Length: 284
Image (cartoon, rainbow, N blue to C red; front, top):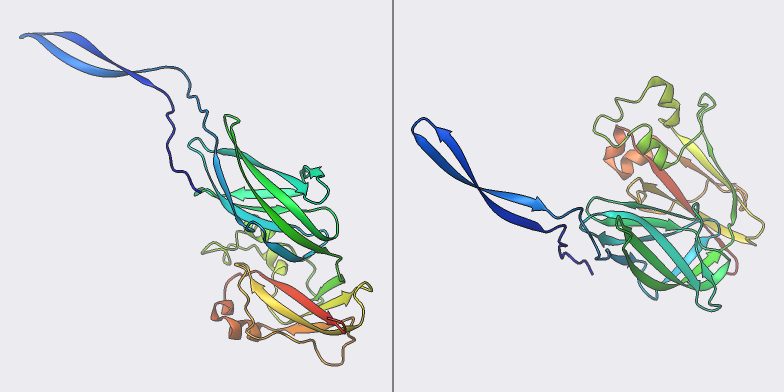
């Protein structure tokens, strides 16, 4: 729950002083109210934090080994949150984990909304108790926890390639690069892109080709979905691979006309899209 209670930062002692100011016609008496500080602020109240996703007792399915699960919630503290930490307990074994610096990352917005990515150890279905701790600048700690079952699966895509025109030399980047380096979300983002950075963007048709690993047996079908930078699926119907492609090497063609058909906003401006591929075998 979000706790909006305020803390007392420091006490003020109000003193009344009387000043006597000489003037030509006599004396003027004035009263003033002077705050007298009692030292630096002291905070002993812990922050409030809630985990809103995933919920307690959720089953998080199909997390690819090496990929994180996503957490989100809200937090609050009068003096601000210094940082978040996380602790994991394997419910079956009782083993406790403290994720490394590369296994837990997060952001906290000005309104207290936080989002995190957490890499979990192991493979298969495991039940974890996840405890997220908010620490304020006075080292007070507040925490919330959920217990979730997570299905961690071996990756079945051994290689993914975006086939672009041969004149493009820049490597494709993730969303953070476009947001932080090129600021593409701003109203004038597309006009501020330097000529040298144009190759980071795709302005024509391109192909996506996958190699499905040998750990995924008897591939029967595959599909592709396209998502916006706001995680909204764009294509109303699943995209099927091009004909006459091996089942283990499906390939899709994406065109600018398709993008405009899905959403008219893609007719102009700078945008970021990503893809989610799925495959089925003969036993599932």
